[in-house]
Length: 169
Image (cartoon, rainbow, N blue to C red):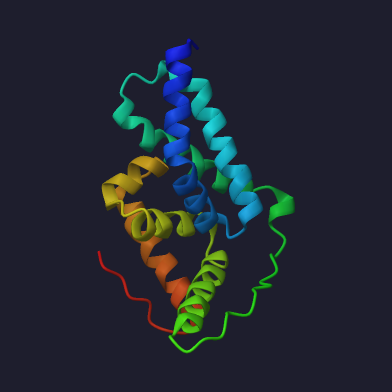
């Protein structure tokens, strides 16, 4: 890779690092694993950087690589162990911050109980804001599969949270 390409990659990495890490966290529920998964995705991207002709497709390639890494990792036997849900107590204050933090932590804990592919669909649809065809492209499956995985994932999340999960799309 020449100096110009290396500089382009460095700039892209700096711009995307935090959002990729947050997405990885939403997918796996653990900041340390999220760091590892984001690094895996960026290393794969770096290897292919010179071959990527359409820079507009870079985000899609990185997203696809990240999601596949999360799903692949979840299939490993040592990852099948139940993860502990040791969540910190939310801060106590008078402006509702504690309720918002508790709700967010409950949602993240609930997401960890949704199967990996369904979790990936939910994160891509409702966190990343992709439409059904976009999620299908990332996961390499049909739009019908995305719709059924979304329905199953939302049903599981509702069951886990014991409440109605609102969706917009």
